[in-house]
Image (cartoon, rainbow, N blue to C red; front, top):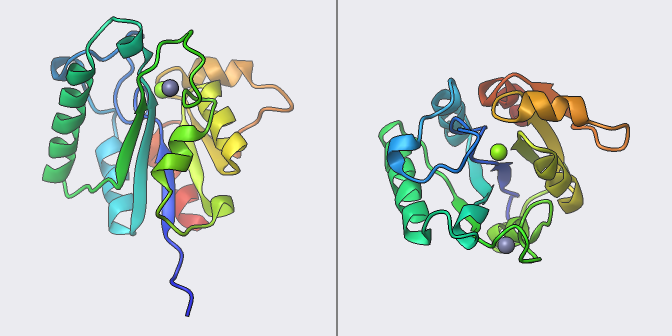
Amino acid sequence: MKPSLRKVVFIDRDGVINVDLWKYVESWEEFRFEDGAIAALKTLTDKGFDIIIISNQAGVGDGIFSESAMWDVHERMVREMGKHGIMIYGARYCTHGKNEQCDCRKPKTRLLEQAVEELEFDKQKTYFVGDKLSDLEAGKNFGAKTILVRTGYGAETEKKLTPTLQPDHIVNNLNDAVPFILKV
Ligand SMILES: [Mg+2]
Ligand SMILES: [Zn+2]
C-alpha cells in the first residue's frame, strides 16, 4: 500500500515569521516574531504539517555576518518555537552572496528540492508563503501554490505584481494564510 502523503508548507523567514528589519537579522537580539506567527505555526504543527523554512541569507556570503551567527539565530528561534509546541521539519538557508550565481538562492528552487528529498507529498497541494517576488517565483518555479503576506516587504511586493506573476492569495500576515493552507 502506498504510504499516505505528507502535508508540506514552505515559509520564508524574514518578513513572514519574524519582523524584517529592512536589513539582515544578524543576532538573536534583533529577532522578533511577527504578530500571529507563533499562533500560525502552532496551528500548522497541530494539523500535522511539515513546516519548512526557506530563506536567503546572502549577508553571510557577502561578509556582513557570519554563518555561525546565522545558525545561532536559527537555533534560538527553534528553541523558542519549541516552547510554544511548534515543530519545524527543517530550514534551508542560501548563504551565498547575491552575485555568486549559486543554484539555490530564491527564486531558484534547489533549497526546496533538497528540503523535501525524503518526503512524499503533492506539490499542487503545497503552499509557499513569502513576502517578496522571489518567494512567489520560487514557489511557482517549484510547482507549488503561493501566498503573499503583507508583512515585511509584502506591501511593497503587492505593488510590483504583474499579470504573469500573481500569488494564489494575498493576506495580511502568516496567521491569515493558515485557513488557505489548511484547506488544500
Ligand atoms: Mg522575506
Ligand atoms: Zn545559494
